[in-house]
Length: 115
Length: 113
Image 1 (cartoon, each protein chain N blue to C red):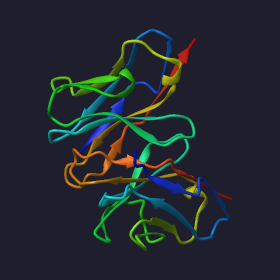
Image 2: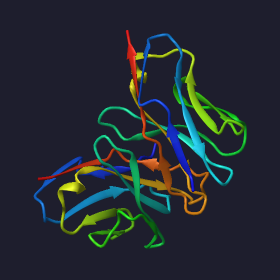
Image 3: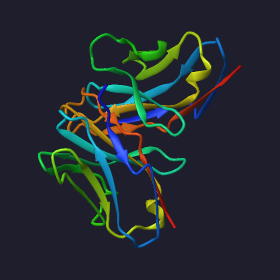
Image 4: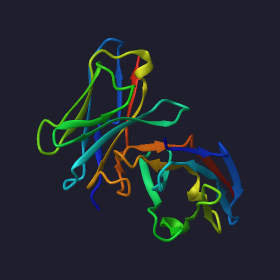
């Protein structure tokens, strides 16, 4: 069964450093998402992406964040200068359609720890 | 705006007894509702979804949920808990105008032998 994959599973970085989190969505999907879950808190939407541009972003997704689909398979989230409060589990998801009825399939997550 | 409220942060049941995880939603549209499960150190897996078809939705691993518009509820049930059901469960509503998912706070289910 096709699945979303994410690398690395765990990333430790120093405050102020740049990190890139990588995701490989399901191959025939067209819509891509990033969510995050700070320890003990809700899963929160960050950004959605379609046709090589951002469809929607949340207030969390400020200028420190960017997303890219550099080739036909990868979907990346870059944090330019990490802060302590960026420590969280980051989930990538993909769907075939953007309809509210369509299922988003999630990857296993990348745990980001900022020291 | 859409939102979901999971009424219990933690539920503990004995193996073989029924499971009830409660969720209430708020939506100005006819909502699409989902239940996802997260096992320790694993990703989010879809259990089931409601998309305005049958109000009783059957999912994987014996779970089901009933959409009740009059009560704005979408509670998750299972007749008989198994040890492997121990996990975090999220009730989720999708935004009809963009597809982003809005998560509840999560309910941690513990299953005692």
